[in-house]
Image 1: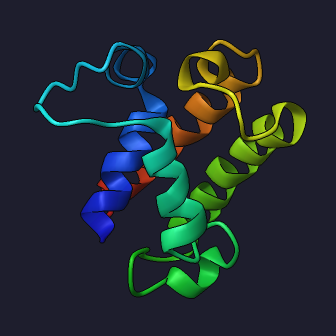
Image 2 (image 1 turned 90 degrees about the vertical axis):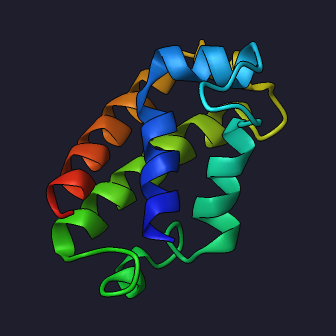
Image 3 (image 1 turned 30 degrees about the vertical axis):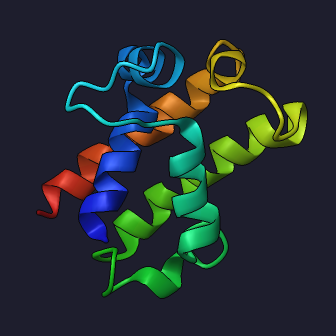
Length: 116
């Protein structure tokens, strides 16, 4: 599950990947990916969005990881609170607030990979 988290965080951190995989449907390793997958992982499949601290020792390693995941979720919430949850991936990634998601995810990826 940790590897899944790192993969989704990477997708949220990489603007080029987002356009290529989510908009054009070209996934570097084959298969399919979409923003929806990362959102469901964070908000529905795990407690990372609602209770990130409860994931320490299971998916996350320590307070630093918990804090950066909270920042990613917060940045996504800013976008969803302003624009709702019905836009296409292409529409989300061009919003000015999306830069906050990318920045938070880059920081999270760095912290997650440093704990490996």
